[in-house]
Image (tube, rainbow, N blue to C red):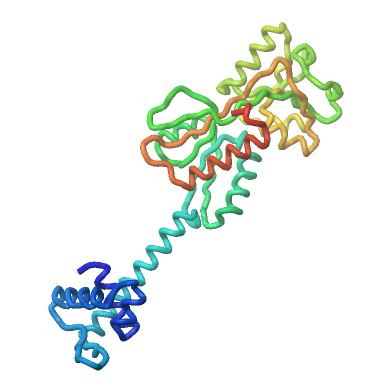
Length: 301
């Protein structure tokens, strides 16, 4: 018994005629008759009684068998709909883990655009430190991870996603707000809010000030850029941050100025190496890259 034989049987049951069934299946009448005969042989009972010059007579066994065939075809139709939904990304789940620098404003914009295009996809977003994101990805727990660079980890694919020059951020009405560019010497003695020691950018920033012989007044160290922005807005001090987080607070009054010499902030995109990347994840990464290039240009990648 094969699917083609069942399709022929179903077509005859629905139309009541071998001729009409053959037309609906784009087959010849003899081909349909042959499939019905083969099916009857395999089933071991008659489906139709045939007499010359009269319509087919459906047997009670055919009626009982047709009920089960219809149930099977309903299941096949449902499977086809599921396959189409998967193919068109009308369903699915996407799990993302990201550090706060990108999860606060950058990712929500991309998620909003992605959901508008694929409203059936459920998105889970977890925000943690870069070390936690990398560990989760190494454990194959998420589809996409965004975090700062690290040494190669087993089970992870790692590619550079964004590299951008840091900016000096300061409270509104700060004495340096009138400057077009801020340099290390400008921050001599200034209250300074620093990234935590485990952040790789912290060491690059410290080296710039050491090379320039500039002493800052380090008043606070904290882990997250968004916390630093909130402290700067309260007038606690100045800082040098990634421009992604800084831009999000600029609309709230934060003063953002280019800093020279440039200190770069780098973020990587991680995908699991031990299992295939879903087409939903591939489409989301493409949208991430498109949004990045609109904001920062191709040179940022």
